[in-house]
Image (cartoon, rainbow, N blue to C red; front, side, top):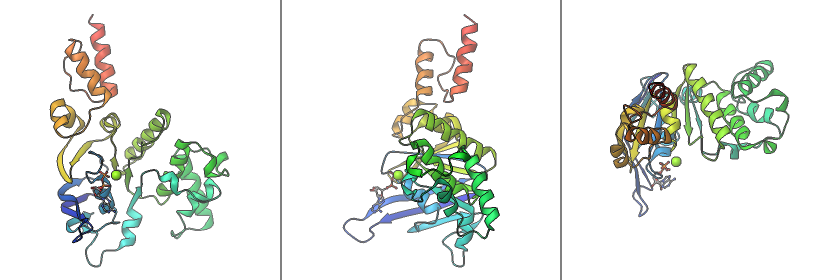
Length: 282
Ligand SMILES: Nc1ncnc2c1ncn2[C@@H]1O[C@H](COP(=O)(O)OP(=O)(O)O)[C@@H](O)[C@H]1O
Ligand SMILES: [Mg+2]
């Protein structure tokens, strides 16, 4: 189920004094089962882009094709998009409103044609999938920790079993443990074959988990490539207005001290391996 974005432009407040060109001539493709990270300065158009892909906004120009079909074309079945794609907005926990965790997740299944038993089974499955303990499903969402609330909100989106998952800054406001939990969940969903688009400022997270990173700059796609391609050259990354992660910075510092052969390391595990290897030789 590839996603193809073709020459997409988008404006807000068109033909008013407040007109903003949020995106300009964006083109890229996300393959089936790919994990694509999206980076860029605040206001560069990341949220606009993913809302266009989710069919929540319509592009002024250009096309968005999912599985070869133009999602804004005449006769496109919007229900198909709803079944195929799930989007988790920033701070999704603010949208929890039911009296219990169980009810909140079950609410997301309302429009699906499932029996009572099937729905109950689905809620159980998805809470387990996000690592939420069943015995806590009767609790009020308000009584949960930040990381737990976010997992419950994500469970609501996963419950419909969409193949494409879009996350808008899912790490914002999480503590280190919540961050790691989320990343492990995303990695698991990726391994299960889902296509993932994830907007984040966290370079370490995207370098560790994404296959490819897209960089937006003032509404334009300024770069795309593997984490190594994007952050291999720190000076170039700076010209893209994105900050490198700690892993890349530590690799740089060790390289400058002559303790690594190459500074272009963006993944934590690889950095650790290289450090161990070099320490052995001493
Ligand atoms: N609903 C809206 N109405 C008017 N302008 C908007 C709206 N949403 C976003 N914008 C503007 O569009 C540009 C891109 O915003 P957005 O896609 O939210 O960026 P990001 O998610 O990268 O921070 C910004 O200049 C922002 O102010
Ligand atoms: Mg945003």
